[in-house]
Image (cartoon, rainbow, N blue to C red; front, side, top):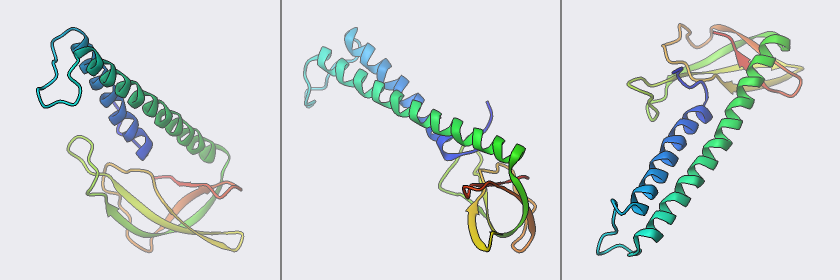
Length: 154
């Protein structure tokens, strides 16, 4: 499985597994394997199964939304590479996102700046799973469109 390039791809994976887990717990409640605790607000196993299953379905719907958003970002990335305007940008900062982890790795991101039609734009790169060989002040290839969307090629 490829490592996620965007936050939406990571959230898609997380919500998929949450949805599957909750639907599975709902099925276990319906089968009588998973029973409510004495201190539980819901004492009926069937009702608990309905609650878990509905929560699982909600998580799967949210996962579908993230899947659509990730597909749109990947499509935009491909369009920018094929028909975007290539300009040079400047690397502002390369940083490690410590609060996020996939497997045993943390992603890097590049903050970059470019000037287009007299306006200065600041953007972040997609997730980079290997340390990029850029330093602040380095030149970087940026592909942009007329809507202000941009991406870098590494």
